[in-house]
Length: 372
Image (cartoon, rainbow, N blue to C red; front, side, top):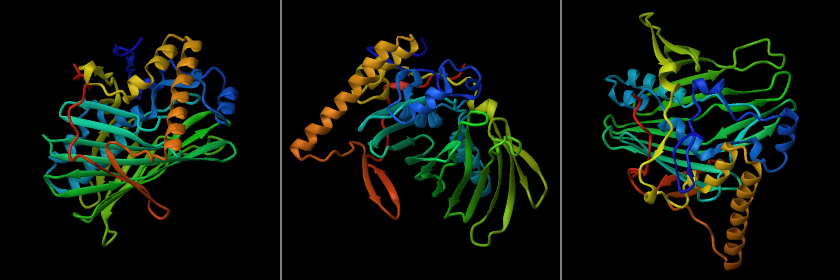
């Protein structure tokens, strides 16, 4: 078994660059996996962790200090370039045929990595909406995310549009970077696979700088394009004047070219950023909240890791039935559920939005070990 286990708190290794080819959690049959998309996913098709943990790991499990670099750069152009590199680092290889647990309403995930404290909460179950708040008082930065994946069947694939925005605030510089996320494309034919596709836009109003990134994908026959390619540019928002060109692959190297000088330099190295990532450990078992992902799904994860599918199935059923009972109880009492850590709003025009109740995230009982 991987990770630290304390009173059914189960943590497993994060998805990393080398995890794409060394994955123990592959579905046994593609057709079964396709059929399972039409109903609740049985544990044999689950990776032993929640979707909430996936979102969190993309922020706190990084081999290189990508966020710190955003804050330490001297010029606005250097900082937005560093933000672009950090945004790329949040993409991880996904495995076809398996899926994380769908987080229950009110589920949380609270982890610290050095001085960065990260807190996530599932603020809606139908539809699934996740909120993330991260603060680093030493670096004086803050990250806020409200994410809502919307899947759409497209014949030979499922396109999951990742709605919502991310905001990275560099308080030392008085700058806020607003960005979206590329989409996730799950292809069934002719070659099954999972790819990041679409566009990502990063903008800072305070510096009048903006970046546009385009993520490549294979054609239906797999003959054109590279599924992990990145092309883009950094430009002045007001004049649309291009300043830099971005090229590369998110699972290899990404470079930026200064259009005024012609200088080309590497801004992102995937092996340094997302290889050999450390599994979080429980530092303070008593401090773990009952709503913590690693505890909520602990018995299910244990069953999956031991390939005890009966135990995993029964444990997952117990989690889901408890949620249905809580929902019925609230309905009978006329109560409306509200998140504990976020203020949430929704509108047809703007979609889901959230703001943290507390100004900063406290240190967590679960921590990411330092790389040795």
